[in-house]
Figure (cartoon, rainbow, N blue to C red):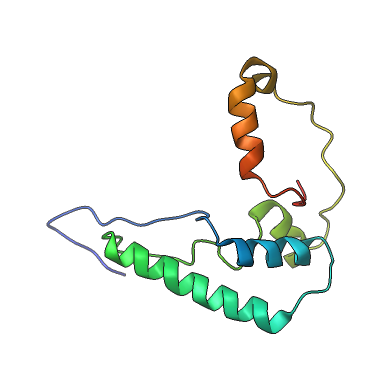
Amino acid sequence: MEYSRDRILTTHMGSLPRVETLANLLISQDNGEAIDEAALATECEAAVGRVVERQLASGIDIGNDGEQPRVGFQTYVSSRMSGFGGEGQRPEPTEISLFPEWAKMIKARRPPKARM
């Protein structure tokens, strides 16, 4: 464990953006489609290398993989643990109708085939 008496050490947690090739492979895998597992492994390794390199360059003291090898936490859980499944039945959030331009921007950022 690193520590410092001179400054507060910084870390990063959470998901970082993925390149399109990796995102598409992960989404296809998450949807149960056949994928090239070797290509996925190669893309994951390269993506983790990129995010770790960028974290180091930005001054992050304790980096991580940026969740590059996972499509998303919500659906990743069900591939690692039993007892999760089904589909959410939540109503559309109110802000979708209140801020249609924002909603359009958010929708454009989401992969079209990702499970929610």
